[in-house]
Length: 617
Ligand SMILES: Nc1nc2c(ncn2[C@@H]2O[C@@H]3COP(=O)(O)O[C@H]4[C@@H](O)[C@H](n5cnc6c(=O)[nH]c(N)nc65)O[C@@H]4COP(=O)(O)O[C@H]3[C@H]2O)c(=O)[nH]1
Image (cartoon, rainbow, N blue to C red):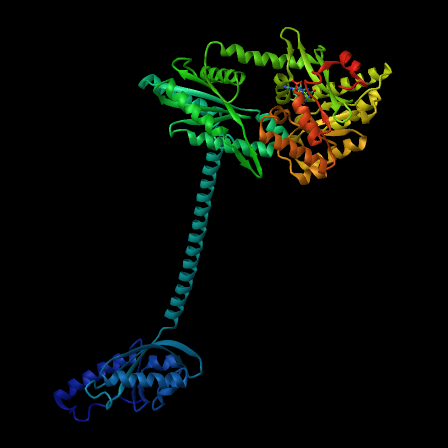
């Protein structure tokens, strides 16, 4: 340990018995001082007085080498020495113990970390006596602590990473579960609903109908099934296009839905067919009231883009328990009643009655027969002459189709043309009409007659058929007819739909030399600007305006306006359905170019019309 023995207190006697005790005590403290496992040093006036072995070893000094060295030799930096000195002075002055961890310096300049404790030898007079410094090398502890901290940080980082990964995986799982649930709901919804209107479809209707019948059997009460179809919807769809048709159906669906109560179901079976299920009614009277409200609501005008459209519904009703007790039977009977309502005059409702089956199956039979009518040669064309008002000369004739049904006799085109439109049969039938008209022209020509042009009706669906132009070209080629003898009539509604495509078709027809007339003019939605762009030759005023022309001021104004319009666009104008000399007078005065109607001639078979050629009316 130290070169010097510790000095006994000057005032204490060391001799005698007391002296030997003191000596003994000193020796004991000396041994503790020398062998303490921590570094201990005494300092006074900032200089080291004694340091034990451990202290010297820690700081790399030889035995006794630190004595009288300034305390600064043990501190890592002068700043640290000053700072600790200040701190120690404050603490010790208050009689407190200083305990800090600092970096210390060995003699060779290397450093290590130590826990430093300092305390005054005389706590009552701290500034007077020496200070004891106890130094513990904590380099390994700190390293272990650092290592521990690093691994703890790593662990925390890993835990954080894992937690985040888990959170992500959980969120992903939740998303996937939600997506799967949404997809499942969508699939279920799609399987049970109609994509266009969002209404329940046939499948869901059947489920609900079964449930309603079950409840009605248990609790009593009446269930009504209403089958609704929109009159002439096909014509709107074909002439104004599917987009307009679809939007119309969506608006109809909304209105029907609004007419129903909460427990009712509105389903769309497809096309323009809707079925309503009304459970818990007290009887037929309730159903009749709903049907009548429904018809009024659905028949109100619809606004689609700039168009104002109207459709009228026909509704058939069947009741549980009166008409059946299964979904199939009830829907079938409501549908049969609907066909009968349609046949009896549209925009009405009818309850199922025993005869309705016959009427709907007749419609089906008629549709079947229509398929075979061309092959069986049951169609024939009649011709109605058109006269020029100024000269009274026959100037053209309109080909009008007649169906000679083998058992039902002559069937009006008003009855079968809409059926043919719906089934698409109007395309081959239209081709037959054109070929027959052209062949007739050739037959008259062959007879040496001075023929007049023939006008042929082209339906909306036929006009949109891709083969129309090639069909007309090949019929003209085949028959060798001069295209200038051919006129096509398209309705105003057909004209206004899909105007760019219409313009192109009309342009090509016109380029062939074929004349174009607009039929039923005044009933559609023409805009002047379009009318001007189309290569149209003739406007045919709808016969509904001509009919009351003399008695109805509005009709008179409309007819006069159409004639004025045709004039300003340099188009010829024909009045259809002229039946009285008064109408002729009016039309003459307004400057109408041509007339057609029963007053002059009904549509006649070809053999009779030829005798009128070159004659005045
Ligand atoms: N009340 C009255 N009616 C008169 C008078 N003059 C002529 N009519 C009728 O008015 C209709 C004129 O034909 P539309 O307007 O093209 O109307 C035609 C046309 O839209 C369609 N149609 C007729 N033939 C064909 C055809 O070959 N193809 C196509 N797609 N439709 C046709 O059937 C509709 C009805 O034809 P039809 O029964 O022959 O009826 C004809 C004709 O008989 C009159 O003074 N008073």
